[in-house]
Image (tube, rainbow, N blue to C red; front, side):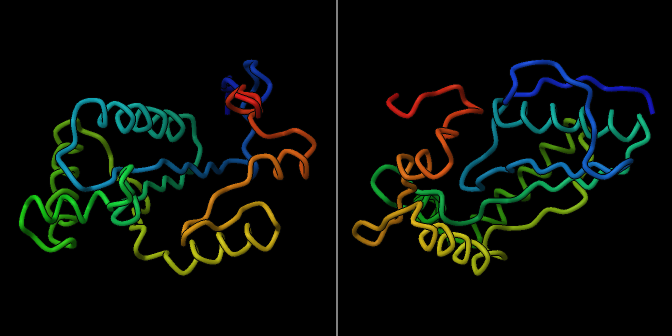
Length: 175
């Protein structure tokens, strides 16, 4: 396989892409939160990753492309779940909203001629794992609870991991 150069957000440099397992690439893309119709801005992400998916396969890599469907837990500023709000506004059950807008998303991806991912899990299918991850973060003293909500403690993470918080984004803790 010929070399592919990618931008490394951590080092801020172009580097030769080397997969963790030779010949295989695992690609995870955060999919849509299905509470409303997708728009062009949403589609841009998925079209871009479709190009990457196709290019990697063209270059000879076996690619497992995972794109999730967020069908619960995306809260608004007032604490209301976006899907619950969409259900209330559309006068539907929450899972009817999920199905309606997931179908609409897939139709739009078809219009843009994107290929389907290898796997498309729904967030609701992984709630047990998500709860366990939050428990692990709490057990490692990297989060705290307030009024039933869990917050990631950026200060403790930075202390425990020698100031690594913000390395990818380039932000400092005090920002």
